[in-house]
Length: 294
Image (cartoon, rainbow, N blue to C red; front, side, top):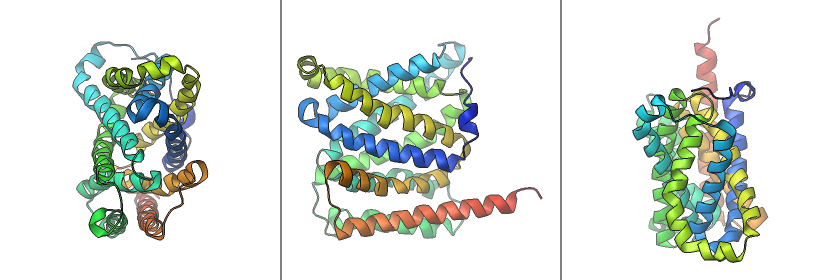
């Protein structure tokens, strides 16, 4: 399959790509909340993913050849993980603050970090992240909508699956072809439900297509493309804890765009997972320097 080579992205450190992706996706999520009143969370996510799929398919123009057909089960699972991750987190942030939802969602990649870790010191950082997530759950006194918490956890499970499947898809398909196909599958899975819940509202308010396009670019096209390239080069355990910076980015986006003021408990939770992210990043960098040929 011939696809454009991401030569420019290859020159950027994987951690840098992931940090830009994190900032972009959380800003996009905050902007998407403005569509909930008219389209609802499901209609909003369906519009966003459908527009993103169209953009990525036009950009990469993947060929549906024998290689795609032989990898179709992997691509379907990858696409369904994208659909589930986005649907559940949008339903969650319709019920609980953005920063809190994303912090709880981190349980997914955290589980991946635990499952793939082979060094005892990694569990120190994982422990910080667990403490942060625990601070926000109702079991520790957090006053949150229980359904919102459950949906954020389901989004996290899909996120964990996405990180593992995305790494496999990235190794099979060059460039962004695999990502484009995966997002297209996610769009097909979401479209019937989105059309049913929000089709009439979108017909009556076609101007929302412009907002949806901005959300699609900020929340899907830009961050997924950067993250997909980063997944090719980052170990799963490093990715799994590094993205714990997502809650801090989500809290900032929620504050600046949605005017959601974090509580002291939220600040403490974000601090815990941010310490975990910094710890695993420094550890990974030190290990890379030690293992590099001299």
